[in-house]
Image 1 (cartoon, chains in turn red, blue):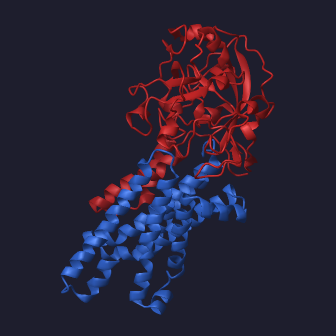
Image 2 (cartoon, rainbow over the protein chains, first blue to last red):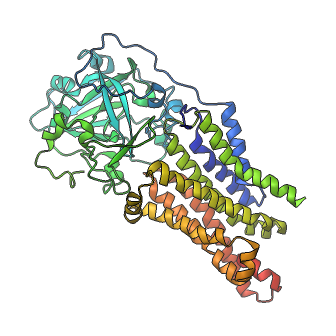
Image 3 (cartoon, rainbow over the protein chains, first blue to last red):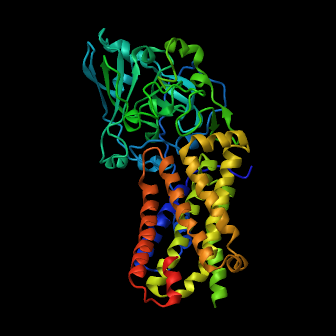
Length: 320
Length: 207
């Protein structure tokens, strides 16, 4: 196969910028072709390619998990340079560079809502709540691509048990940090900031739902959601909120960001489901990064044994 | 001299493809090369459509009338990159599954729009020869080739409908197309108001 990968050049940028240039030139009346502009920009990118960002710190005492898949893991380079992280950029290859100096310490997580122990937890307190486990999960994006990632963390239920939600808590809501000074993507209203996601209480308590702070044996890189994110492997990737600063327990269904943005396209549940198409594309197949042919998408992303019972009796076409 | 310029322009038009191929062979298309190829060829198609549409306003505004000699080349390159873009879809996305593609075209409006944009380019590419212009006659040929307005519009709509949330880039294309089409509207209104323009100018104003 002639196509390989090493994503240190922003191919997706070249033409739009050349168009930008050519538009100015059109308007100025100068006779310059867009192709020439494309070459110029191309050369500039060759001369100063983006730098690879590594989080670096090894995490000690990682345990193996029975939930891990034995499928081939996606290379670290791809998982750290192909990120849907709109807080930094809508271009997937840009968060690696733009998140390089993102500050993950000090970091507090506010626990509030229908919970007995309302508090502000320090990130380092949270990390000590339970021993770190490696969970090698399939991760399926709503856009039709997938990866296999060795996340590190522990079940979200470990944290929830320690803060004692009240009987009124039916849902749990996660809020991403809002800091436009550090997150250039938040300076434009592409989505409604801050990013909010949510789970039903029983989903959050399912042992598969991961509170995550590392991957590939190391601290979580900034562009992958450091210092704290959730990973919900049977749901589309956008459910797995990154850089969490608030966990709120509530009686009503949280209004998650993508659903607010396009309610006919993104639901609250967002379970991976090959039988329910996104209105604009099929979800029957997916492209695993690094593979040429598409592979069939599995119901609940292959985690049906653990989670199908959560949705018995529900119309998954309606609750997409 | 013009021959030299034409050869240079031809090479410049091939530069994006050369660039893409070079990146492909040097593993520089990112984690999802097929997506990168799809986006790149799509951007090239739209860019060349807009370059083609900018020839007439440019030559009128700058009075560099020789620019018309390049229009066909730009238009055919738009078609060429459009073919590559369609091929990435047919081959690398759908793997020649005709049934899947027909379902897609019927069901997904951004595919419908993109396919419309492409299909509208076919008669233009086919009638791009001197022979076809003579055969059709200048007036009819010109009328037929106004299809490019609709092709470019469908192409921009295709882009607008396909993005998830960030409309910045498709709206940039839309803005340029808007300016280029507005120029024609204004030119047409002026030419209609001033019937005394020399004959040779009338056709050119309306292109």
